Length: 445
Image (cartoon, rainbow, N blue to C red):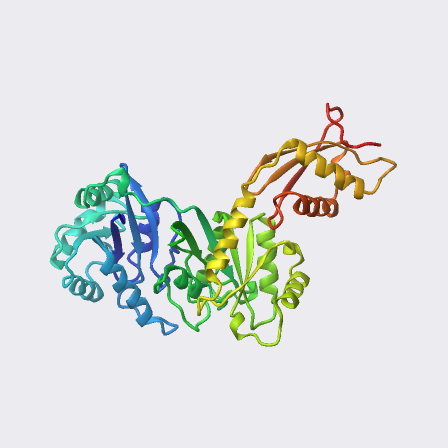
């Protein structure tokens, strides 16, 4: 059974995204004093008093989009309204009723939904007397809130739950088994891939670069398993970031990588690997996230074999040389399911633990093949190794002097573990710790 849906609507700049963030208690939607920041439907699950519902933020009604996406934004709003169980009609108490508020009200009057009027920006009690004017809109007395201050949040949530159908534990949707961040430079095909996975027009797809601004969570199902895909804003060169909207979009793209269990790193097969691709690859590497390099638009490439392209990727993105590649066409749904299966395999690798004896045997063999260079007449020694965590698999290596084990040797050790343990395609994390005495010394001098 699907959970109830509550949709936030209103004209631009009344604080819809701020209210969305207030309910979720985290910054999901971009809040900016610029009209038209939100374009797609942004959604999250809200839990209150053991009740769960889906909250949806929408673009401003009545806006003319600067990139010619007005019809697409309006279509997203219509889809949200069609799915809604309750609509929150947000107005700005400080502005009073505007002509655009009246247009929104007239539009909502024709839908057969429960509508709650919300007067936002009631930051102090002195603004409450201004709410009476909004009774003229015909949706009853408005609920006063201050989305930025959190005032009125609990009362409004209580009201919502009182109007929604009773819910039992079995009604709550199953948790996604893993989160997939879909990242890449602008126009790599991220939103097209999201829509293919969701099997519907979930986000706006346009030839206009930078269409997606927020990070958008979309649930989908494959093989009766639930997944959460995170569509992110396209990354571009810092010197090309034109405004704060794009700056926050980039910050959310990076946060999406940190949230993810597995990253789907989209590369446009029709273009050369760019500086942006390299920087994005370095960020994924720095976060130690399992990653599939997804070569999108492969159907448009002629005369290049996959093995040849693989060598090209390894040359351009050496820090991700162990990462698997998936050649797909998001538009045609070619090999998309296989890509998800590959991501599932990486997820399992990232959550694997090995025994201490098995680990120490592999480390011993790695040392026998190659040991760090001797420095200051000091011989590097490894005493003992143990795995302390998963996702990513994390290892503590007890040594005589951590300064003798540099990043090159760490890279070598990681490659050795990947070749002999069930971590073949994922990043590993190492901590070298000084220890003078131990019961197990696997370094034979």
